[in-house]
Length: 330
Image 1 (tube, rainbow, N blue to C red):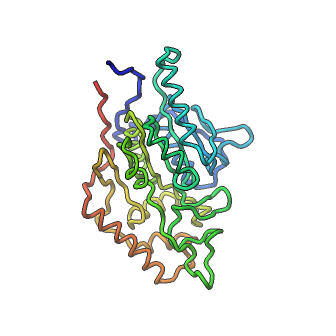
Image 2: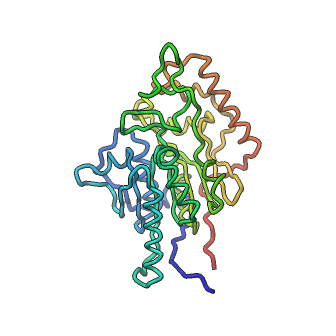
Image 3: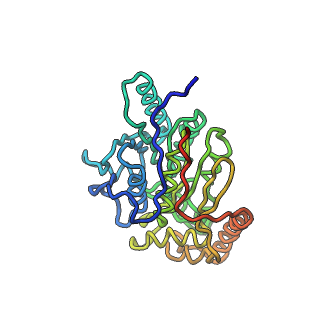
């Protein structure tokens, strides 16, 4: 039996900044902080996806700052979801469009359905709905814009907050001088390891916009669930000068605090692998959330990162953007 043609969209890679789409789908008018990494991230994702797109925005910074006073910066469809159920709301939208297409009531291109969730809405409060969405195999791109805290409610710790960070829930003191004592979850591995229908996952940083946009385009070209973990530096929560947002995104990669890769059909390909890694202290010294740490705490973080670097060096197959896009099925 011939498969129904839902008119899924397929994208070609962007070969240079000059070739990037000119049309903006995330426009001025929001109330994000100066130097906001998640806002720049949203702009790049929306630019890569284009006009036929629906965003689901679970409660978080990008909901609170982007939808105040009945005004939003989206030039495409957007819907708010609870922080617990971004994956569930997206699943319903995807299923509804498929029904409408089969009944002949919708004949346009199948929309790009993208969940834009923070770290809490991805691997903490929202984990169950995200997991169920991927388990069922919905054609949805789930993006975690990771600013490494619950930032819009006062910079509380989240599962992706780094070891040693000073947050309102992990303040350093006499009994616990380092602040946060736990190391962060690894979001891509949570989804890669437990969801057979997931065939593509990736990490990226807002400091590498071409890499980011091309990974979004590749993910949207798959006819099933995909996941991208995006590092989005937060000047307010990390306590750095807002003009350093892009530098923080690059230093995270250059020190090994953040690893850039794709996982596609069981195979890893690493992008932007440094020829020589910088010490993690070069990254941490710019951020007030780490200002209280002593040498032994920084050494503990370095040891954690060194283990990650060993895995990268053992398996790395470096590639540079643009990332090839899957060919359309005949």
